[in-house]
Length: 146
Image 1 (tube, helix red, strand yellow):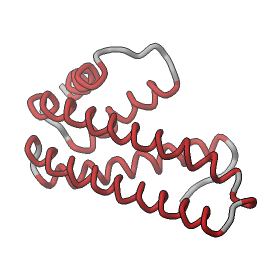
Image 2 (cartoon, helix red, strand yellow):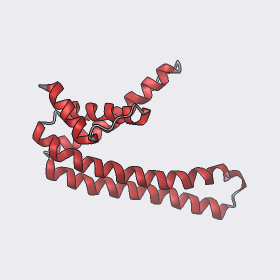
Image 3 (tube, rainbow, N blue to C red):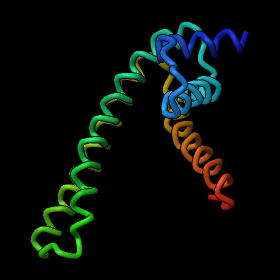
């Protein structure tokens, strides 16, 4: 039953669009990880994954937009004036505020489709997944992240 639910969740989350790309594999693993951690029922999965996908898309867009701009500025940090560095610092803090506002917005949306304890578990599961992913990458390179 759990395997069927996991397959259904992956179908709901991605519409079976895995072409073997590394990012898509990571996303599929993330779907399985979150599904397992939240112990989603079939009905919960049907309403949760569309909301989560919107959240994830908005978060990726925000990060992509800011990351690209800031990474270019980081390359020039040693040549920046204090005023430019201050402007960059403001952009960094504005990004963090925007990210927090997005999380707050979607926490309210998640509470509409999941019990509040599962919403809390969702954010913990995301962090746990990132940590496990980083640990696996570090192990491949001979180190470990604790």
